[in-house]
Amino acid sequence: MNSIILAVIGIMVAVVAILLVKKVSNKKDAEPLPTPADEQDKQPQEPIEEADVNPEKNDQDISAHRDIEVETEDATLPEMMAEDTTPEQEIKLQLDADEQEPTIPDEVESEVIDATDKPEQEVEPALDLIEPEEPESAEPTPSVQESAPAPVVEKELQELEEVAPIDAEEIAAQVSVAKIKLTLEQYAKRLNQLEEQQHAALQQAITTQQDQKRDTLQRELVLMNEKLALLDESYQEELSCYGNVLQALEKLEASLGQETVAQAKSDLVAGIPETAESLLAGLINAPGSSKGVGAFYSGRLAESRVDLLTALQRYKTALQEDSGNPDYLYAAGLTARRLFKYNEAVNWLEQYVSICTLNNQDDPVLLAQAKRELAYTYVTSGQHKKAGPMYKEAMTGFAKHLGQESPEMATSWFQIGELQETLGEYDKAVALYKKALAILEKRQGKDHPMLTGLLDKLAALCMELEMERESVPLYERLVAIRKKTLRPTHPLLAISLNNLAESYRLQRQYPEAEACYQESLSIAEQTQGKDHPSVGAILQELAKLCSNQRKNDEAERYQTRATAIFEKAVAAEDKRSKNTSLSLDL
Image (cartoon, rainbow, N blue to C red):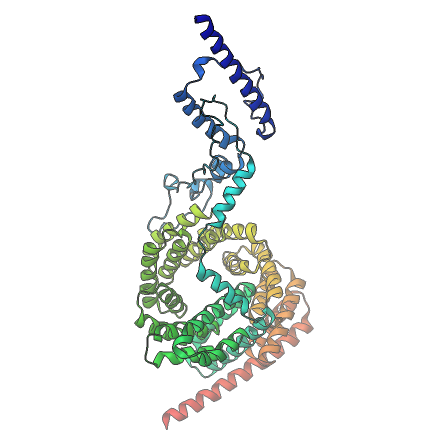
């Protein structure tokens, strides 16, 4: 009897062994590439003993082997998520002065972010997308499990993508933007015409001594020049603005009537925003619940044509209707800051940051941007101590989620550099400007328009610190970029040429300096007339330059013309002053 039992057991063991051999041979094509452990001395598998056929132990083996499969066959997935992280890739704030990295200024609270305070990298857990296959029979199976083929992973990833939530509003916004027919060339032409008109109005305000109007025009002109310098980016912002307004008009059709809205939509799609702005502005004084919407979107259109005072007034009206709307608060805060209305700007942006903190925990980059805008507003309003902690929080967020080399970090360093320069810490400011410039050069290239503000600031500071040798290549790059991005007669190009000429002169590069002054003179004569005092100033610089080169005849000719211009300007000013005094006496 015992011999029969032993025989039966022997037969069962033999059958199991045959099935295992067959199964292993069938899975060879699906096996992953061998790992280093597999490359060790490959010995034939030992026969499986009866003691190994244990259901409880087998479950543990399957679980352990499942983990091994995720780490080998589908190695690319977990490696990207967790395992391939090197110390250099860990997101942290490198603000240690010992490593020659600029620090947040001493005058600001929380000025140095200690290395122990660096944010830890958040790593998503590896997704266990590979499920073990069901055994072919109810019999206990050995610890060797067949790996799921790669297509299973691809299929399940595809299924995850298919069930991802769809942002209907974002899709609608993209569709709206796609409808707009305004081309980049049309936008650039319109913006250049607007800048020329603004510049002429500014000159008139200066001449007539309308100080308040002059200040507003100057601030609006700065924004126009920023748009021209970053033309591609500002063009996309314009299209986005039109797309958002188009969505708003479509939602207003029910209350205003389809025919009323149709013309505004048609013009807006054609790139003509005036009809839409007029219609939306009309809602401000109309009864109904659309007052805030009309005020906000008509304000957006006013801002797009750089009428900041009108835009701010409309944003205020929108906030009266919905004081907690984050879009309204953000737009009003930035516009108020551009107009130097800091009390209002700080109030609105503080509310905006509070709302973002509550509502945007799932969008840490947006929250970081909000905090940086508030920090910069603190700086421009003189509240330096409040700016420090806010910059620290913002930059921690950027470094953690975007990395040290992101453009957002460059913008932050640039702003802190401006603060250092304001506080008289010029060496620290130079270091911070250079840090920001290096980041942008690496990400955008050395001739990207985004670099113009940094190049201008850094070059001017180098001139101030008598570091002319460093300022020359910076101004050369600035002039080259502005020649590519601005029209040939733009005043900013003339200013940059003047600055480059001065840095050349101080380096005794006289021919190069003279060529720059001549270019600047041509621009000034075309835009302001041959008798304008700015033309006289350039002529005087040319006279000095020619004198240094012992070109006395040319120097005398330039100086004679400059003197005549100045005398004429003084006579005109005296005449205007006498007329003003006479009218006041009367």
